[in-house]
Image (cartoon, rainbow over all chains, first blue to last red; front, side, top):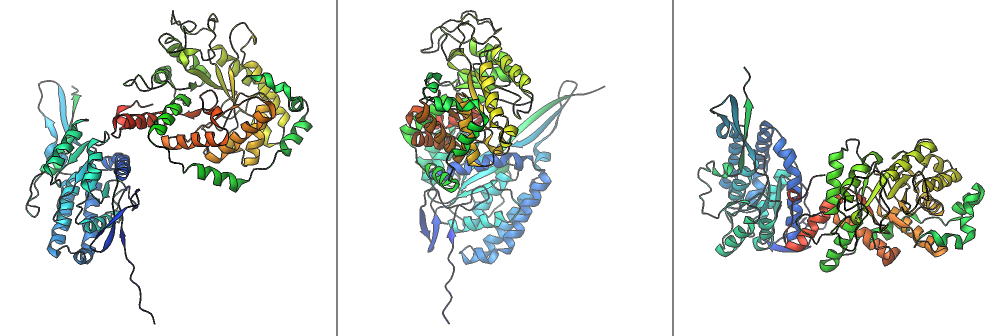
Length: 272
Length: 363
């Protein structure tokens, strides 16, 4: 009896809820696995998918978004061993799972904490409601592979934004495996899109794209590239989060959620 | 290229005289190889058009767009806005060409004419258009000035007629519909053929109807001084014709009856323009010109939304009928959302960064 040949996996991109190969057909080797090397056209396709998903995701109730983020945690818990096999420490997977739960709880509390009734000098109800910014480009941190990625994706999508993430070039396997988790979590296609490959190739396209509303440069290590991206982002006045060092295992804080909120204020005449 | 050459081949022009001869001719046309047509269309769709060729294709496609709004909810305001966009699709870029035509319902023609006619001066190579000095809204009493076939500041004004989209109305109603549109200022008429009669095999009826509508395209008093006859586009509604053989027959029937253009669809049925159907129609106009010397235009309409799609059609035109048809006078796209995608791609080529829909009008 012949020995069974193991089925090897090609790690592909995650765009619009599907797992396509790179349009360019290229791939690179990481930990003995083939990983797609995204091109700028993949970045373009990802933005189209993210834009198409904004309406449905931002329009979903906060309660529903919270349920889905919690579902991500459930799915991640079940795949713990798979991440450990990829070299992600067990306690990091646990921390990432807990982080999904933590952000899931925030979905219907953000509007309460950051919105509300304003006292005004006139016969009006004056209400401020935080709304999502739209499509957010995210450069994921180099490490930790899973916790860092979750810590930049979850705060962006919890309020109804959709993201295009350029995953850490050194650790794309965890990112694509997280995409498999997201794909089985009732998260609508296009809310999270993950590109693997070189930041320098795809991120400038995202930074210059007129249909992207904000860019998170957390994972950019080259200061020259960061400056260039910031200049490109200025063309359509994107919100920009500059690169900074983080202790990803500590308290995440609220800043990563609140920089992606736009406040809508409504004046409503008071009757009688 | 006008209808003068039709009579050169009397054997074809005589066909309309008898239903039997017409049927014999149409059923004598060779059948379409369905698999072959679809394979050929798919193959032509894989061509890669880049950089300067793409820029040229985009500008050509913009000039070929029949910017269309055919909704029950059309208002004069929306039609005026659309006409303004037709003249200057990208207000931020004066080098952007204007579209081929605006296409509206007959009742909306005066509002579109008002905008298109008011902008006569200042358009390159068009000369002083009739009525441009006063900018007077159309009331059908314009003096025939330069009688430029393009009229209306370079942008044609098309109107659907003949009980669009079903075509299920008495002939008298269809004729009145057509005359009203022409009187209101339309210089192109998009008529629908009577699919009921066509599918029932009453080719003579369809033929006579097209001839009658073509006659009505001259207006209530056809042949009046100066004003050129409105161009007639014949909508085959290929989504309802079921087979490519029927598409080929309907194409020939429309051309024999005198149509200036053959158009795929109304955009009101689920299956609209497809590449294989357009291929069959392009082959028909090519063969028709070979047989009669008269050139007929083609207009795919409905379902063409992206620049990529539009370029596939242009490749097919070039490969099937040649560059003679690569001109807004002989090939048009009936579309509404296509224009914005063309403008976004055009902006991408000029600026190097991907454009977003926030910077173009909603229509």
